[in-house]
Length: 123
Image 1 (spheres, rainbow, N blue to C red):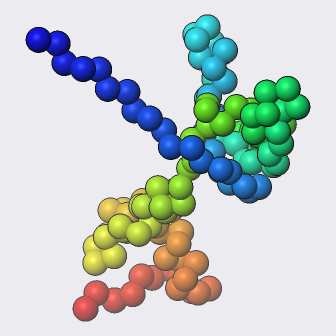
Image 2: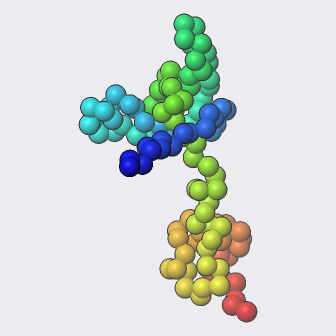
Image 3: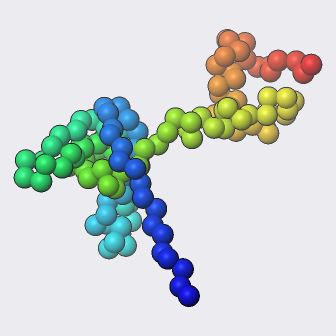
């Protein structure tokens, strides 16, 4: 008896200007070329005149390069919760800041004010 094959189905997402996304250049990916996946910022959306499909224009953040006509089937959202997870779960009770990620330390220093050389005393 064979098991049925399941395929992950990505829900349709509508992106707005400023959203951060992960984009895969499918041609480069299938050809095995480097540089096929990058982080981008959505600049605008538009509808293709012939196919009526919504496409996106992105800015590739690593090189500030414009990418036009991106198919959303090859984009995935980069949620803020994922980016902020290390800060949200930082071990604030640890006296050793080395146990925290650099992002968590930076956030703490920003919120402790100008004299951020010392963390709050442990209770």
